[in-house]
Image (tube, rainbow, N blue to C red; front, side, top):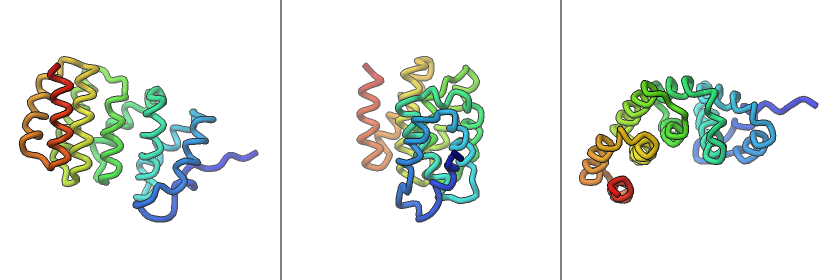
Length: 173
């Protein structure tokens, strides 16, 4: 039996719907080796495909972060060049799940710092969460992350201020 191409399940409609992401997730659960297809789709020419691939990959990696392990370098490179807000906010959620070396961790923190200046408040809010998550795994970055979060808690959108208060309380303990 020929397998279904994941990209085909990610097409159609617009960026306001998740399309057939649940079907993609069912396939990934049964065939985790196919995660590479999703990673490839993150660079697709079609913005809908990119967004849905990012959504599926983020959801799959929330349960099984090890799925991202073979794709660390690709995801870091993509996070540095991605312009599409949906792609950026999903990448922000995935970066803390990556097993990072010292240089890669610095790169991720720098990328997320840039995301804090994004036009999209959703991207900025997910970047705040990602920085906090990274600082839980890598305590050496916690003081700098706390300083940034405190600043954003004072100046950001209402959602950023609320998230920032929770994150600062969590990290300051």
